[in-house]
Amino acid sequence: MKILIQIGHPAQFHFYKNAVTEWQKRGHKVRLLIRKKDVLEKLVATSGFDYVNIEGKIYNKSSKIELIKLIFSRFYRLLYQVISFRPHVVISPDPILAKICRFSTAKFIAVSEDDYSVIKTLADLLFPSSDHILAPQVCDFSKWQHKKIGYAGYMKLAYLHPNRFRPQKSFVENNINAEKYILIRLVSLVAHHDEGVKGINNNLLDRLIEIFESKGYVVFISSEKELQDKYKCYKLNTAVEVIHHVMAFASFVICDSQSMAVEAAMLGVPSIRFNDFAGKISVLEELEHKHGLTYGIQTSEPEKLYEKIEELLAIPNLQEEFQARRQRMLADKIDVTAFLVWFIENYPKSAEIMQETPDYQLKFK
Image (cartoon, rainbow, N blue to C red; front, top):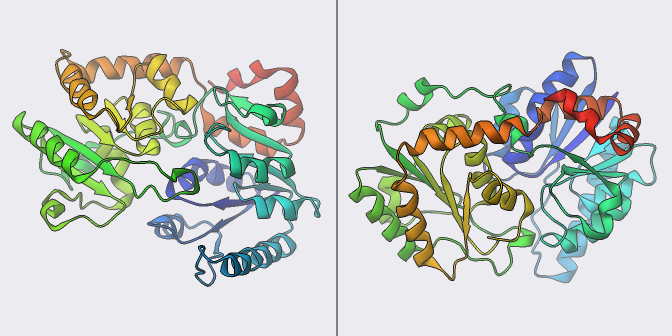
């Protein structure tokens, strides 16, 4: 089998990496398509996987003419990959690639963990040309729900399930000289679904640093955007490949990132995300209200953020409590990588099995 996977950011690469290794061991050919973003190409290049960077000329998306040029440029680059590689299955979040697959023999699977209400514009472009949508059971795809194959897990669990990841203290000790530390993650909020969304500003960042330093914590900041000079002393200077080890041994994670909030929950690390998606994303709502592993607060309510921090820090044996909550969550979920390997390897028969007998996936616990 030939599998073509398009990846847009590091979290997507982590989702697939263990499955790709397994597929290759079983004799399948896998090719990754990427576009340059942050540390993505470094991650993929060091993995040793077959990949192609399809990033072309940079176009000004605010110009309609330039946007049309970008669409045509991407269309031809993707078309070439489909024609030259001749995949049996294509997995991607790209509507252009989905439409190309309608004129080939390849089956197209969209993978998502964002609800329809969050990615409505993208969904209405992507899902009509998708054969199926692979997503956590909790996700709501509204009018496209009939195409959904729901699994008992989360995308981040594909690489942070204990069957796939064991935190190593040595990686942390080699990079961080602190017993008690917190991690603050700042994202750029420039994705297509981030328009009008706010996160952690400098005033709030100053207050967070003050709160945690007054309680004896060392503060580290990981940021997609350039930090102001006064924050550079807090910058987390670790290799990108050890970030999950660093997170696993953190006392607390504060972020305006959905991805890192979910990752912290998978590791059983107390976390609060502060952005305008709070209360709107089913995966995070389940992790908050069913499992008590993370908390979301709207940017209009900064005082609630400080109150929640104080509330959590007052819990005796906070780390042990969150590890217990994590174990209860894991008991409710499957090994997502094992399920993904089986699902793609046996597709489209696997889709029929899941639609007729959804509990079949429980064999991957």
